Amino acid sequence: MSHVVSPIREKLVTGGKSYSDVTHDICKQVEGEPTKEWKIAFGISCLVFIYGAYCLFYTWWQGIGVWGLNKTVGWAWDITNFVWWVGIGHAGTLISAVLLLFRQKWRTSINRSAEAMTIFAVLCAASFILAHMGRPWLAHWALPLPNAFGSLWVNFNSPLVWDVFAISTYLSVSLLFWYMGLVPDLATIRDRATTAGRKFWYGLFSLGWTGSSKTWARYEYMSLILAGISTPLVLSVHTIVSMDFATSVIPGWHTTIFPPYFVAGAIFSGFAMVQTLLLITRVVFKLEDYITIEHIEMMNIVVTVTGSVVGIAYLTEFFIAWYSGVEYESYAFINRATGPYWWAYWMMMTCNVISPQLFWSKAIRTNLMVSFFLSIVVNVGMWFERFVIIVTSLHRDYIPSSWAMFSPTMYDIGDYIFSFGLFFTLFFLFAKFLPVVNMAEVKSVMKGVSSNFPAKKAKAAKKTEE
Amino acid sequence: MSSTTNYILGVYDDEDEVLHAVTAVKAQGIKIEDVFTPFPIHGLDVAVGHARTRLPIAAFMFGTLGMICALSLISYTMVFDWPMIIGGKDFFALPNWIPVTFEGTVLFTAFGLVTTFCASNNLYPGNKVEPLDLRITDDKFVMAINVDKNKVSAADIKKALKDSGAIEVNTK
Image (tube, rainbow over all chains, first blue to last red):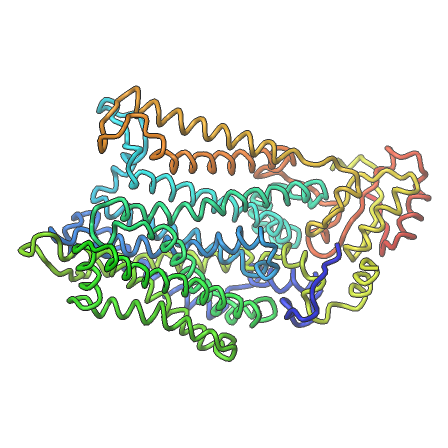
């Protein structure tokens, strides 16, 4: 396999690593005792999780009356958090599926953790969907199951039902894709195992992988097809999420721009979240040779592109509100920018439209501290985007006497904290027990993209090109 | 792999060398059982002589099945079993059903494809394999030749492997 890579490309694996070094560097984390940093971080996220679980339990026990919702603002933090987490999840699929179809080699060292992030983010999103149902133990009523009411079926014309199917398909297909990607690497750990426990568990989940050329050939086809179906799947998910709003008749929601605008926003916030996590992971697990400045820069470029799409969408929305001549629509937008929630609107505009434009400067987009800071800024902005769309559009409805404001209670905040606890607890468990970098894929692209690749290999690669 | 089989293993440490070696060894009339590698090598399956996989066909069929199942369920519930007028639309409101039909198609394709893949490669939880070489999942490329299925003598096979660049020749 000779990789023809332009010499002007930055190296994606640095430090003169051999294949064996890759195995060693990545497996080290799984095989060794947990580090002190990991224990502290995991401990904190468990505490956050426990506090959040208490708040969520209380919400389930008492009902959603404990939230700050009122008759006018019937959706607030619950749906804001749901859309935010689902959006964040999109980056993992983008990196593993879309970049695979585009044959982007830089995806290989980051796809594993990005996909893990997708799964955990979708689980966090699901916690809000369950909670906002009020009676979560009846969640199965959203599925078309035969029942004692007729059978009274679900309404397949409703975007809320579409969403149930979209999110559950997305979660299960992402999990499957991620797991199949893990199988060869689990086999690596199985074959290196020195303890009976590790040999058993990694042996169990590596399904008897042998690495035969026939299996690999089929595996490649399978990955390609999974990527091919995951690409429209991921686009469909946020499209359908946006239709929860767009098919309603609320001014500010009833717009045809929502599907592409939501998808762009999802990728935007997701890449920012991947960036936040990777910048921590590469330092904590000493993966600087695999997740290089080049990777960070590529991610920042995607953030700028999608951030610009989002910016254009905001401006288009505003323009159309005026140009359509619909008074209610115009009012909804003027109210967003200058009404009582103006601060949320301008927070969103600053974080999402202005801040990613800083990445036009190479010095900024290759600076780790600034990238880390801006990745968090982007996610703050994207949370406010959903808050603005949901709360600001609802709080002033058609009858001025029912106009109201929304203020969160400790359970609104506590349930949000729960999702962070869940997300980070799962992420730290993943980072300890599973290889955070896809070893097989990194090895498969190393020739050509690795700096100082051992001389014998380089010579052999040259021979192939001839 | 059963332990009674008589294998000769050529161990290589470079993916390009093993790819060339497959062609070189085959040219001497030696039948290769399989090549085991730590990562996919493009063109290796063709060089070894494996037939092209039919997984895409399976995926397509599962997708079609998913689409039919989703559309049947929706039509049955919305048109026949309990029709309801929603927004003054027809009972048979096909455009509204596209999202769920699409999700059903993707779900069936993904699970059907992965199940077929696992079944055709004998992959299942708890499958205990004895790797021909533990370094296959690390950094070594192993060409396995079944002596009993070859007319060429074991000594000639070993020589052919050495000549093609194998760093070690083992038997198992």
